Amino acid sequence: MLQLFKNTSYDIVNKRRFTFILSLVLIVLGLVSLFVRGLNYGIDFSGGAKMQVEFSQTITAEELRAKFTEKNLRNPEIKSSGNNEYMITLNPENLDDAEIILAEALEGTDYNLLQMDKIGPKIGRELRANSLKAVGIALLLVLIYITVRFEFRFAVGAVVALAHDVLITLGLFSIFQWEISMPVLAAFLTIVGYSLNDTIVIFDRIRENLKVHKGKPITDIINYSINESLSRTVITSVTTFLVVVILALFGGQVLFGFSIAMVIGVIVGTYSSMYIAAPILVVWGHKFKEKEKPEEKKK
Image (cartoon, rainbow, N blue to C red):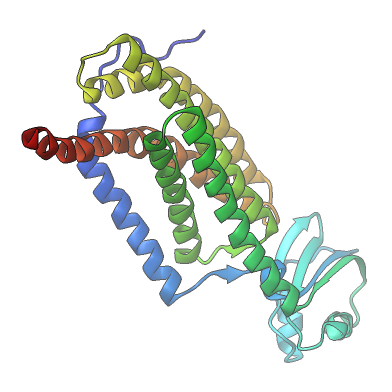
């Protein structure tokens, strides 16, 4: 197996105060943005009509947008989806008016409507509610799975790390007003799975070393375990990161939401596995030791 790091001894656990504060600041900034600016929901969650239109002549997004502005029609969202192809999103009061608005805006222009998706506002609200339930159920199942496979304290660390990843990614989407769509939701659930896999690898090492190095301080065991799995973590993260970065750069605007969510998720997920999930085991251990000491004195 390829080893990028050999015999490393990085003191990761004792940096937990700094990393906890850093994560807390990022989460708070994201939450403030969520309350103040909210999220930029796509038609999947807000309702509207999304049309894929192909043009016979070369036309830019700015020229296309100007056609709607000149005729005082609704301001559409326009994204390139290929050579002279665009995804045009409208939020008309009546979804049946979408094609009429498009025809009026593009009058005199040679175009072909390739595809149209319509979602009513009620369905959009239901999808939003179901999406929140999906993420909540995923975190609950992770809590149960890690508790069964390891111990409850491991499960707490894993769930806190996953919630940390989702909140930071969601906060960045709010700050930069990137569109939230169904592919982005798929990216969020993928982030949960990716981060969990990375965390479990480290937890496996910790569990093994707790048995082998009995009597050693838990801080040393966790640091040793993280350093042992560092090569595997970095190789996996870098290879995944390169793929999603290429997707973000060359996948076009249609795939941008999914790919940028994955880019953030890979970075934050790798960070949380080492600097959030594992150090929480130390915090948990200190908490219960303090509770045990008074009981020992009473005896």
